[in-house]
Length: 270
Length: 250
Image (cartoon, rainbow over all chains, first blue to last red; front, side, top):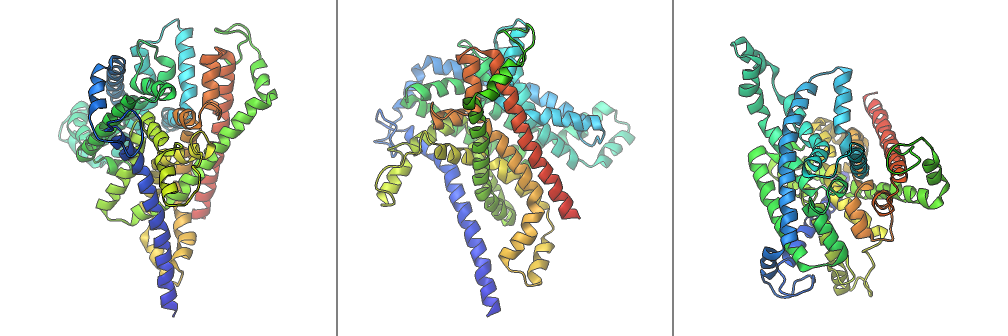
């Protein structure tokens, strides 16, 4: 009798949590699936399910000059941002990881703060700063702004990877006569490469997707894709927007699968 | 800048912009609405995120990877694309209304787009990984024999959950809440596109003062107020986290 009620209770917990998980997974995935299916519509409206299937809106993207220009800007900015963030983030991680001094802790908090502070306030502050210096919005300044908000991703995953590193390996390398630089290149770097890679991937996506900083640091000339799409959605809901969105969803999926295969993305994040 | 009397540039100091914020009921009602919005979205995120972390922590390595992959899918997909998709879902003739009407759950289409409820749902979906991942990390490190011991001593599943699993995972819960909360209150794109022009939260307020009204000192003042308010909430949560850790180890 007691045993039976225990089993019922055990089943009820699994049922409730399992159901909540199922609902969450559906809600998490649904938007990506729906936007992808909508983008193949043959009609002029964004109804779901789509009325007829065609690739016409993808074809229409060929002539969307402004959108292509914005997409190119975004790619350039994201690539530069990722490269700089990887160098700075890894360097900072090397200095901070394993260092228990008060300075290291303070630096860690400082570098991570863009993740929790309102990004829009940072974007505005960056604009004010740029103007006080007498400069105008440009791509290099946009990259600089993105680096500030993207470094935390590389820093976090690199510190995590470094904390898994067995310090004995470094001692062995040094005792065998390898210099600091050789040890870093031949031992440390290969062992933390997956962590750094996962961070680089996250930084790239965060930069490509950034709105709050770009909103202030980009002008018509340096317009980036998310801002362009945002204005499109805000003014006229055009089906080409769905086609670009479809492309972005597909590209994100492909990149995520690659990052999972190459850097073990999901393992780096838990 | 926020202490400056004229725009733009620094010419003299004044606290007038701060005084204006705190004497205008409209201004601080926006701050209140934003902080409350973050709390509601974080609560929803926790209610669904905790079970997801619990299930993931008990799943095999393969399924755990699949679940984590699905959880991070939305946050890595462009925020504008995500929000755009939600417009298709939540609209008057959107997927959700069609489904609910078809199933006979409602007689009239629900208004979800441009409402706070809509904003909360979308925020909770988008920020889910920030809640799930820290909880999952802490849960995977917890000693599973404690759960076995609790069950062997006759405690049921729910009792074990409340008395063992939840207290042990509290640091993860707090970390998740801090990340989710700060992401929700500052989610400019989601707030403006799903909330529309009539639901004004702090990020939009800052943006329209800075770019629309070109009033930089005031925009700077409300940015500072907003940042301090968010930091205060985060600080309170972090304090709770320290207290819970002390409790768990005491």
